[in-house]
Image (cartoon, rainbow, N blue to C red; front, side, top):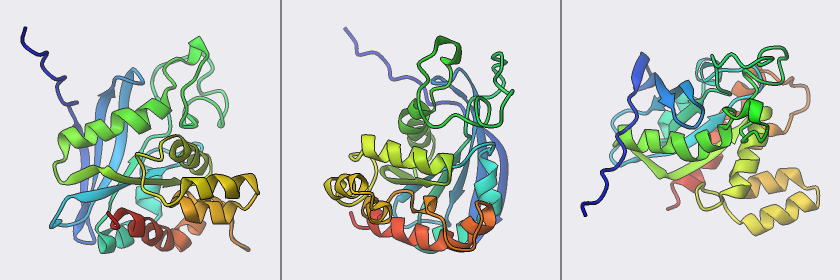
Length: 235
């Protein structure tokens, strides 16, 4: 019996393309099998890589879309300098018209929390599966210049929490350092040392005098990308 043919690559609709720091900001829409609705994601590709690019996933906070980080953070300068692709998914399913999905800013639309819902009503809220399983495959199937097996993950607010929990469940998928040390530091309450070990969402921690906005993120984003790049380029 002949082997079953592999499933076709997800069809991508390109929504926009803009040049920046020699590379390009790209935005796409595709039908998500995990979430049962169209999803958008943004991608920054540095210019003409000599080898396949490692991937750094950014998870945004409550009420954001895939565009907030790409437009407001200024992260492309550091990503271009380090030769790292940036991928920013949307924060939840949209357009499903589930009762109550838009009643609160912190629950439902724009608030997927990067986990899989267990309540039947919210069965399409499977952002964990989307980020960890589906989106990497979409990227692999459509962008030969990306090395999705060499990836790291970070984020802000809801996305910082999502990045940390996803990393802890998938230390084989995301580049970091010593997950045993990370666990020990978290249990001891040493959050900053834990994040440094993980190569994970350092941006979670606040800095004196700064608020929770993208002004804060833009101030420190270069440091965070450099931090992740050292793990992504280490092998």
